[in-house]
Length: 314
Image (cartoon, rainbow, N blue to C red; front, side, top):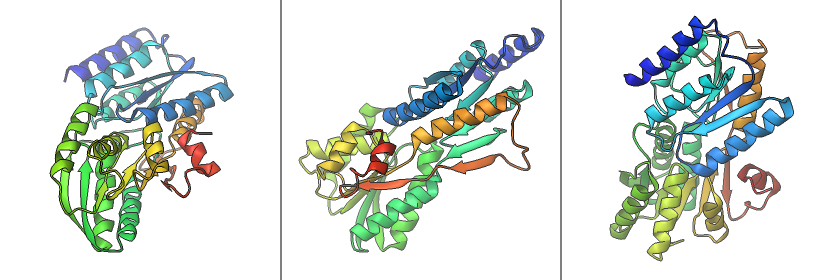
């Protein structure tokens, strides 16, 4: 509750000043926390767009997917710096209230990576259910339509991974597989690695694992390596970083579904800048939605030019 009062107070203060402190001098980019390399690529795309446009971006991110109050404080900082638009990866449905308040003072918000409702002018994200379904189909094909698999989830409150997890389950089961392990690893590196190691150490008769984001994927890769079981089962992950990319090259992991975070950051800043110029789309019943798509990366295609570009290896 304190979070809302803080933002509301700042908005009321700005209104009392005649909105003189809110200008189009910069665009705020506030990410969600978790998956460090993913957000670095979002930032890279955002800064690339800002450089081409000739505006400034202020980029910050919460330290954890569940740090709702921390993300709210960063939105306050964006306002304090006089930014005229916001690019936001909302980490809680509570952000919908903040976005409505921003809209009331003519500050447009572009959501990236996920949608929690509210009144953003645009949502730029992956179709997470379909991305998880792709992982499920790849798993079923790799296992020949039979076998037992594990699902190492992130956290029940994270909407993006929840959609991926459900998509995976639906397609894996449809493809003839049985999900026999279904657990949450948590949103911090330490807890995820500890839980993954503990579960894997006792897990028997399982032929595949799906991990729905960068953190869970890396925790599982490291744990399997520690147990000297890398490559012993079909592990399909999500997102990437330097260590995950190396694991693909070494065949320690079967493959990963990757989003296009650079494109998310680039397109979002461009759209936010257009909004500051007054070029906002006419909204009907709901905001516009742009799907940036996904790719499946494994040992066979990781060195292709398109894949290397999306991975930030070019």
